[in-house]
Amino acid sequence: MTLVLAGTPIGDPADAPPRLAAELAAADVIAAEDTRRLRRLTAALGVAPAGRIVSYFEGNESARTPELVAALAGGERVVLVTDAGMPSVSDPGYRLVAACVAQGIEVTAVPGPSAVLTALAVSGLPVDRFCFEGFLPRKAGERLARLREVAGERRTLVYFEAPHRLADALAAMAEVFGADRRAAVCRELTKTYEEVRRGPLAELAEWAEGGVRGEITVVVEGAPEPGPQDVGPEELARRVALRESAGQARKAAIAAVAEEANVPKRDVFDAVVAAKRGA
Image 1 (spheres, rainbow, N blue to C red):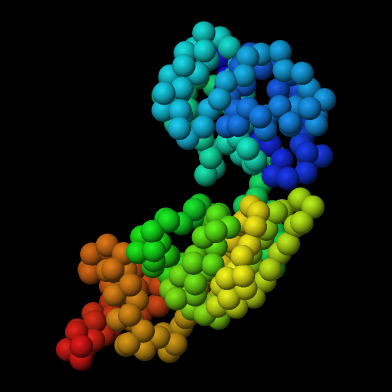
Image 2: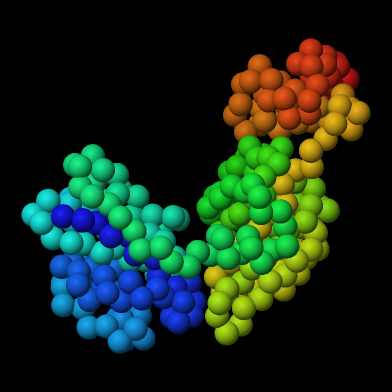
């Protein structure tokens, strides 16, 4: 009666921890995002699973979760694997974990390679504080709104992105965060054609226009920490406007900008009023 979230290699099968092979061999049920990839992985690890294998992916996640919970409640050990990395982190798994927690079913994990941490470590950007933002929205307007929500974030930002959307995503980041904000595009990590491209966002966006292939993780430097003397009224008003365009109420936006810029809220309010008068 245990759900095992099993982290799988993000590229090189040799990165798999020994416990992964043991769990796959002993599982009563293996729920896999892609059963064909699972079979390739078990072959590489020299494992012959004795339990039954079922698919568990975005298209059937809602319907299959109750089946797996029932199997767990019946005393079976279920191992969940996705195509790469840790299940439930931008991959199927969250619904199942939440359902198990609600039912009092034990949930554990086999830790393994992480594209987020690997990209962060090799990016050359600050690693002491970071936040993972997952995939950006596909639609341009929604993507810009999401980026504006974190325009003032000082922690390093980590994103996943599809290769065919990378150029647009980097261009949007350059627009919102600034063309000179440092970033790193990490491609095919731990695989044969691994590449880490570092530089300003505008430069990376121009490079990506030529086409990029493979699994992509983008690491972006956090916003600079300004002092009171660094932020003028126009910049304060611009930051409030960015937050408002992302859906934040003006009062809350003013308070947030005042805190991040280390200035009195009254100064921010006055800057917003002045900007409205001058518009």
